[in-house]
Image 1 (cartoon, one colour):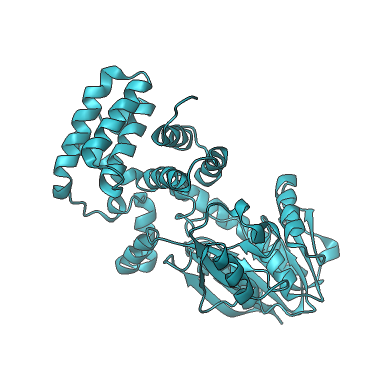
Image 2 (cartoon, one colour):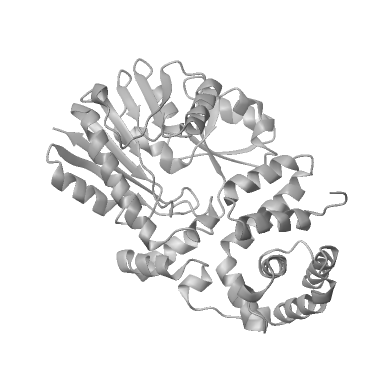
Length: 423
């Protein structure tokens, strides 16, 4: 489309995510790849406007409904998206003055065939802009734009004070966390090479393989990424092989491995051992194989397998079983902001049942004296601590060695890890 603006790109992207159910992290990446010819700052603007509008949707709707006689739910999809974007810019971005922001969204609506509603858009946005300093929101769930049932559950499980910290944590700015391929070079060597190319690197204080990077254009433009010298992987996820105590000669299976980060990390640590990475679909196995090829590890293999199905040949065969299982994903809302709107109480119960089924199955793959490492990227006791408690009560041959629940902050996402030893 000739002459398309950054806001138009964001508008079309948001309609696909909020109205048509596209996954934000996948669809937005595809959009940014499509417009890779744009300046880095322009793509950063689109990224922030889209992600910010998605993650603040509940709060934005509350503000709009407070000023508009036509409620958000009754608006045409394009108009409510325009309104949400406008309010997000007014409250959270300072690229242009508020008056110019209002003008931009009026022009955008006109360009998309809604000239008749331009006065409505202009009036509501300007009124919100004039009175924004008077708007106060006390309810936790509206203030942090989190579905009320999730906030209620966290308040019950963790208390209001901890829940407040969790909700704040999702809005902490976060650099991209990478794992250095220590089998090919040291962290200092990689940091030096990236720094020389203008990438800002901060070394993690607590995990030797982890760095945080910023001020880069795109990953695909970094030669060291294409050469397999580092892998994008959150700090929390990098803890798993360390917690599991992976040794150089271990035989390891990762039962739900895609995209393969933990399996590859295990492969680096078990340099004289082997790793089998499994997942449910051809597409996921293909993704694992792509990453194996890029990183260049010969002791890691991938295959398609349904983790709920018992594999007779794997019984008592592995020193370490990595079970990073399907979960509600409530710990990684910062990376996938739409995930909080797509979950329901009922789905959490179904996921807990699936996790229990997989744990029952794959625990049989652990050798006597071996390790079962269970992890999720969620904040939900029914999927985490309670799941472990139920498993241990029905599997007396296992004993818990270490368990931790991480909450989101500047360094990492929400994540749960439990290490269990087989007697």
